[in-house]
Image 1 (spheres, rainbow, N blue to C red):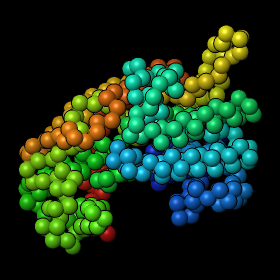
Image 2: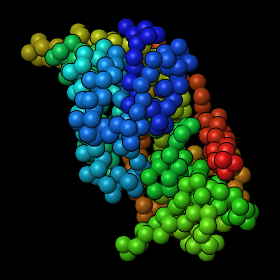
Image 3: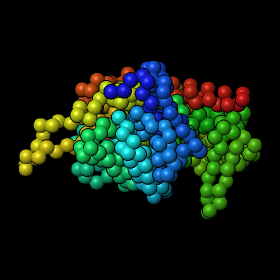
Image 4: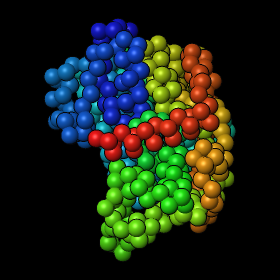
Length: 379
């Protein structure tokens, strides 16, 4: 097992989950941590990853780095999602094996499960039917990653554990209007609409000065920031359904989703890293018709086991932000999977359960978002 002196490489330590895992490890007294930003270490570069492992020789690895995005990005950049994630996993897991890493934690996603999986989704649902089309390339990459961990463990006796988090949100989230996940995107859209509705152009300019917004039409890219004219800003924001009178969101609002605060995901991940071994993740008594023990579905779902509709989430955000305009839905846009509720009974058996509920989480994230705007504009 790992001790307080163990060197732990957190790949993706600037990201939503990676940063939270880093902080959680520090809080537990694990301070011998290694993290490299993309400019320092390109995980797509096999030679660079090998050199990094040759020099650092980590005892443990947390693979939280990934190429991620929402429905729009998954639809438009399918090759990027499968290629980059496979490459990152191949490089990091491969070098971990070659350098005798004691423990590896691989972070995936519950999008690995079939579109029509029985709800709530048990780990055993994996590969039982067709995936959701919109994120199929990303899901296939993550399935390959968890199967790499599983297969190395079976063949070589390594101790690589894969955790599959549900929809995450929290500090250091991505609020890009095109590439972010649903909950942070809704917070930013509704916040900007509130500012427009109240004619608070100073707040709008602060927001887009920190995170410029662009739109590409007919091959021409338009970008607005704090220096842009009001008419240009209104034009680009309207492209994303943001107006002074209303916010228009993708789909029908009917899909059900489960949300987990990212710092709780981090706590669950570190709990698994420190306390769970591969042998704890499967039942060795299950044999097939030929009497062979089938070791599969060793990954661990991480979530709350609770769900609510996208419409309900949006309404909670409307209330938190106090936007007086309308909430509209563009049903011509895809909904994605209608339900994605995880069965977290394995995680509970392994000793971890969530504490932060969605209302508290939305409040915390909105407060963090506002604080970030103020801090960055004082610098």
